[in-house]
Image (cartoon, rainbow, N blue to C red; front, side):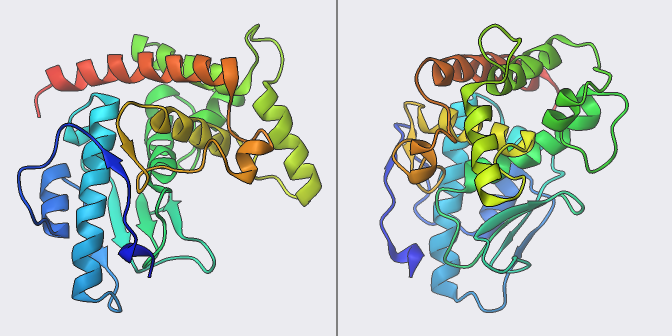
Length: 259
């Protein structure tokens, strides 16, 4: 069983309480709701709650933001062991604004799926003419009308760093590798802007001084990484710097706003 594995975690800021539940997760981060599948045992539920709680604490620390950033101001719902899709260990559902992990699955996928939720949440805040199911990264690529704001400018810089080369005039190497993988697979997936940005965000999180392989894993030594589907080298450093600048400014703004 996957959750019986030991997961590597390095964070000098440890939680004070020994045992946590999904109710503690909901209260701490103000998720809109948390639903647990009927076939999840009490032991599985307890183990998963601890792992998920610690992963979100680590994500919050890496992003230098408050709890409301993690739950996207209480708009994000979470499901564990229920409402999944066949063959998919984790996913984000835009229609219900729900982040879901399959039972005994999903380790390492949290950062990726959480960024999908953020990308979707930001679309109508960063652009004035988007549909309800559009993601901000897609809106940027489609030249939607931006909402002028310094924080949005930093967000757009992240998208630019992921999808374009250093000149800002040509597709990035990651985009070219993603397009090649899609051509080989006969579908559009890796080169989708939301997927590219979620993988780039994974790399940013995995490169942080705080480590948690339940939160993120696989951006360096996997087959996908070897194919160039994750950023590497100077491109990775440029993306990491853009995300760091964005979340620093966003975190400062959220910390100073009334809760």
